Amino acid sequence: MWRLIDGTGNPPVENATILIEGLKIKAVGKDIETPSEVGVIDATGMTVMPGLIDSQVHHSGGFGQ
Image 1 (cartoon, rainbow, N blue to C red):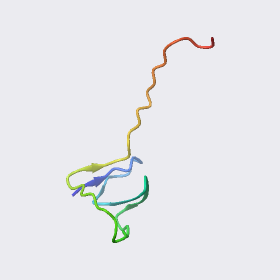
Image 2: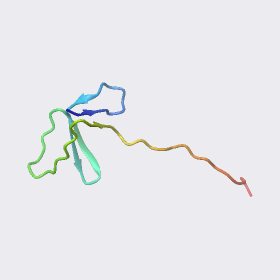
Image 3: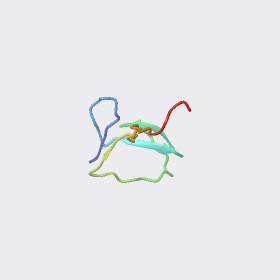
């Protein structure tokens, strides 16, 4: 079993399918039809969630020179 956390505040989805095309997520859900030629990543025992972005920035130096 694995779970998907979508970052929206909805409860985790158990054993969902994530269809990725190129570098983009094309579909996510329980009833996603997948083409037979796709590669499969087994996420058993894992949690999948959106990437976290480090948005904290420290600026140093002078302004307006």
